[in-house]
Amino acid sequence: MSVQDRLVEGEIVVRLTVNGEERRGIAEPRLLLVDFLRHELGLTGTHVGCEQGVCGACSIRLDGELVRSCLLFAVQAEGSSIETVEGLAPGEDLHPIQQAYHEQHGLQCGFCTPGLLLATVDLLERNTSPSEQEIRDYLAGNICRCTGYVGVVAAVQEAARKLEAGGS
Amino acid sequence: MKPAPFKYVAAETVEEAVAALGEHGDEAKVLAGGQSLVPLMNLRLATPGVLVDVNRIAELSGVRANGNLEIGAVTRQAAIERSAEARAAAPLIVEALRHVAHPPIRSRGTIGGTVAHADPAAEIPAVLLALGGEVVARGPGGERTIPADELFQGYFTTALQPDELLTSVRFPAQGPGARTALQEVARKQADFALAGAVVAANVGDDGTCESARIVLFGVADRPLRAPGAEEAVTSRSLADVAVLADAAQSAAAGIDPTGDAHASAEYRKEVAGVLVRRALTTVAEGGVRA
Image (tube, rainbow over all chains, first blue to last red; front, side):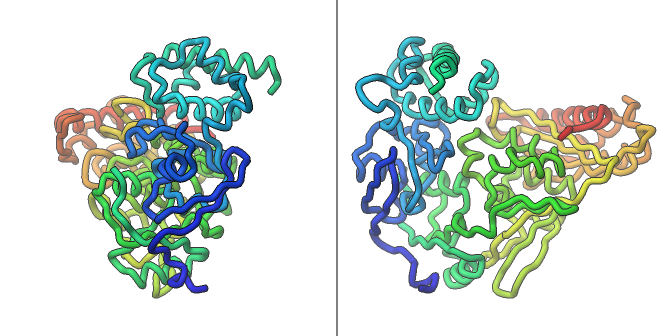
């Protein structure tokens, strides 16, 4: 099929894996991935903040990379594997990173938290014991207007300790 | 806000992408990492009728160090940061990428995207110009290379034609005396530079600067070479503070930046000179290391 014949004008079906589950939904080309996750798949844990890639609230992982889901179109995610905040805690118990944010007051209103949690997952996967400066640099793209970041940094440090000790 | 409606096609080969761009002309835009284009679309500052997605074109990704360093246009900035080959061949690029937005932007953002977008305050275009690099573009008439000196033509404007696709970015091999540095001032980590300077010099064993390309960014409508500063250091010792002061003064005198809410024109002019001096100092101390 030629490239002209593949031009997408209206709605198409998008298939992808979200938190290990095969999912599908309908998207027109302009539908942002974050809106697809929220409105088509009902996964409202990922938040929509600035819609211009600045605030980090919509951070998810796409094929193992931390990305802004407001700067991707759903049609681009066809066939990809996505991790969102809903995939962190398998059951009633919080994920160690979530638990650390809870214990260290790494959140107040919670709007930025899903993005920060995914950014923390990504950081600790790449660097199991980051310094305070490394944490601040890595999370600089996630804006929080409540905590002043002190609790956030403490939470990441606590999470790093928990994960190291737990070996998970 | 949400982007205006558009048509979308995912090209699988460069030929397909070029065909789609040829078919839709000015109406079409190339979608690579989307880290500059999609914010503009979400704000409705850009309303392209067709997006040609080049992310699935395998041949556009990858780092090849073979004398010179050739990086496929859709190679993610994060992948270049992690590439041992890129770091060894041109440590300045990896150093510069640390200043390009945040990690989750660099995980999607591409080398070709930042070059083609041609933001005058962006680091990579300035690095490409300082290193004397070039880009490769494919259009309906075939392939051509465009030297960095001719590529950047003004605010967000390059010599690329609407029906051409940037396919790779080339940085020339650096000799044993090559030393490089980048200095910038930004309001916070990952912000666009208020002003910046890049130096790529060849330094002899005795510390004499044999040649230098000095580029300023964030101070004009494009990355700008500073010929006065280059002349001021050529055949001079970089250990001589008077030489560095002279270069700084020449660099500042040669530009006419505009002021905005973030920094006045006078501030940018002053800081540009200071950054040239700092970058030259870094070069004198050995420059950016792999």
